[in-house]
Image (cartoon, rainbow, N blue to C red; front, side, top):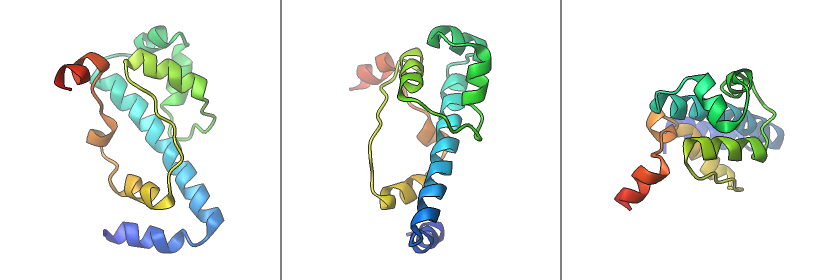
Length: 120
């Protein structure tokens, strides 16, 4: 296990800290993934906004790592615009720690439906 993973496992003995840390990580990861997926498709924020039936300013807010008012409805609109599946699930903190440790642009990048299914 990595040093970061071991450190987080120790620090997560504090319930409030664990929840706050993972909430911040989730906000950052979602914002980063939206931007990564948009850039991978060579899309502007305006183009994504049109596909998702939102305003460009909304996309800009969603790509901000400080954003924290996520709704499943908004995420579903983005999933449809990106032509990907949205998965929302509860996971143990150990999985969350691994998500932190393994976060990378490659992890955030996913193929669109047609590309994915062609390889399936």
